Picture (cartoon, protein in one colour):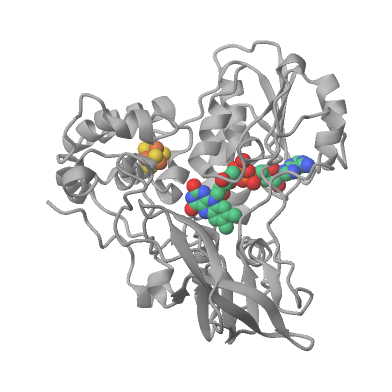
Length: 451
Ligand SMILES: Cc1cc2nc3c(=O)[nH]c(=O)nc-3n(C[C@H](O)[C@H](O)[C@H](O)COP(=O)(O)OP(=O)(O)OC[C@H]3O[C@@H](n4cnc5c(N)ncnc54)[C@H](O)[C@@H]3O)c2cc1C
Ligand code: SF4
């Protein structure tokens, strides 16, 4: 039996709104899919795939029998916020599903979505305050997935937890980065109410290190959890960077989300009627594509310096590794030109950007097909016309002069990830401790707090 590939609303419908792109599958759709799960003796999905260690084969078995309640109980053992992961997780579990060896992986993420959506609809998700207080107080800095996960873990153990967040609301990149069409922000608000009912206190609009010093927090709380994400986006400092119309991806995506959330009267950067060029071929770039299309752009092109990945799993990433292969998102399917092996040389224009000069690069590969290094191809320069350029090239970690780093005396790795100071009860979790990664890894890191 094949997987269900048609999991999205029709393109002509979805590209005109910011509602979630995925359609809802029913239990009848999912049940036969989960019967494909072999209940492996060594379930890689659970052990090597899911960073949370979700009990995937057991959940699959319950769902294949139609026992959603049991599946929800099993899912809740390791997962605090399945309503988020079931929508935006790249499903590391599926990439190492044994069924991927002979046909296609089991639809684990879709099943997770049906479980948690049903659980909310039937009123099974209720606040779970601790049975008793332990008399200790913890401050969590940052209300992204890592901070929320750490806060819930500590609260369960009886800590009195206060979460400080510099933004107007909680969620971090879940709220101010990832577009609404991938994750409806009402789900974060619903979860906030549950966390508050469990006794977690949120102090938003408070920039720790500036409004309140981090060392003050470490003096008055028994433990401090730093979960500030990776604040610095990678820029492209080539000639013309100061031209009007060249923006970091998060300025664009965050602005659109703040507008949809009612914090702004209009999106601060609009793609309407423009030729958009997205530089960076990853997920953030793909989110820029989908947002540009919904804002009514004239055209959108996404370019990447890396070569075009293979259509199927590259031998350089054999099963059960996370596969190096071409990924086509729902946004790409909505109408976007994608090009690879292009290096950006300069932004063109007088006051506003009118295009980007690029050149083709030729890649050298390892015997197994891993791209190693590139060289510019002679006489390959060309101009891609654009009125709006969005830079989606990842993040560079935590700046070494960040006030929290200084005030708490935190050490950093050569790649500027923050190191915990267990001797002072200061713990760093999520992207700030690992480098920019994934929601599910941030959640796992908050959950595995050694406290
Ligand atoms: C556009 C985009 C799309 C993405 N899409 C996906 C996806 O589809 N799937 C996926 O798995 N991952 C995705 N990611 C990655 C994912 O969002 C991150 O890995 C994850 O959010 C990291 O969680 P975190 O809690 O460590 O950091 P963040 O989510 O960055 O949260 C950090 C929080 O700390 C707050 N903060 C920072 N400094 C302070 C301070 N001084 N005082 C108080 N608060 C502070 C910030 O305001 C923020 O709320 C995406 C990332 C981006 C940028
Ligand atoms: S959280 Fe992600 S990796 Fe874990 S079971 Fe769900 S979809 Fe798979």
